Length: 252
Image (tube, rainbow, N blue to C red; front, side, top):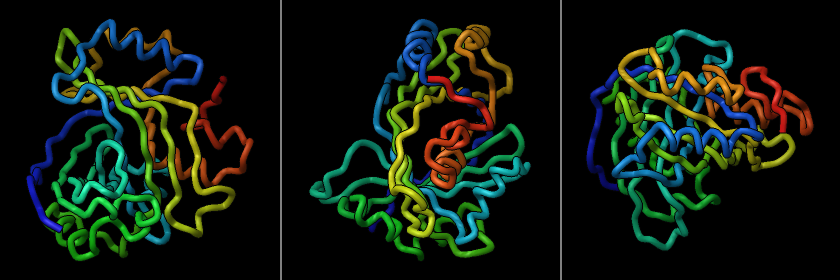
């Protein structure tokens, strides 16, 4: 394993998330295309994240209870992987949140591509020494050992709002595979029927154009893909809670 670019300077930003019900997924993307420009460098790709947590799911519990301070540790990579590419760049990320403000630190690592095939994700992609040493460099010292829990994958469109340049992303086709075997109550993989709009900028205020999102029957929420997917796996199949983020009812 080799290290590449490091970005360990946390930049604080405000992040607002809006979950989109299934019937409005197409409308939401069309709306963003009217008021935003596609990102010049990475307009669309597949995002994959392997999340780490303690054996007791401490970070999930903090997220579910709405605690003021919380962290997420994940290894992220982009695109699809067959395992035959030789090596692949991945990013060890620490995402920290305090109230409405969040920051992210990450380090690029090069790993054998076979580390990313589904059968091997339970090994964590990177070794524990690299995981712990990099988190220590970020100033994060978990109270208990971390282990891989779940991998979440989705398609992402990236935009910039035309008037302000604020970053906007649109995530859909969200799926998750449970890596921790004891949490596979009913199945090991699920697909979620919702999409998510994320707005990231230096202030908490939304641009005027984005305030029109209300017609999509959505509102700002503390939506977390990690928390949402864990909830879905822990809920009974067919239950409303399984696919309803933050207690909302999902109408197809």
